[in-house]
Length: 157
Image (cartoon, rainbow, N blue to C red; front, side, top):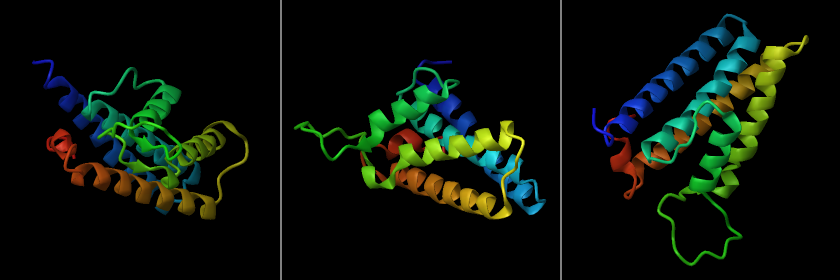
């Protein structure tokens, strides 16, 4: 298998996990398994970031959550207070989307759902599932429709 082809295969596998986790999160919500739904919602969002990183060749280690979250933010989020004169074609996610804060908040909910003795409420679960689903769609649409980057996603999404 060629080196150029491998990232697309890995990215495609991560994307399949995103779709699976979203489906499982929705089914868990419908079946009142709110903790499991929140956990799967977080993983769908996390794996979306990993898919983007892998597709564009920006990845170090996809098993380390802080690394993936940091790398995504560093590589793709437009920082308004930067003095860079060169436009980076990869920086296409608006800072006001608050991707970093959202992912960190979802990670905290996932920790509560997975490790704490009290559970996630139905309302919290629904809000998290909706927020994650919308953010994933927005992120994916942004990359699929970007003139400079959409070629990287033809075989992935």
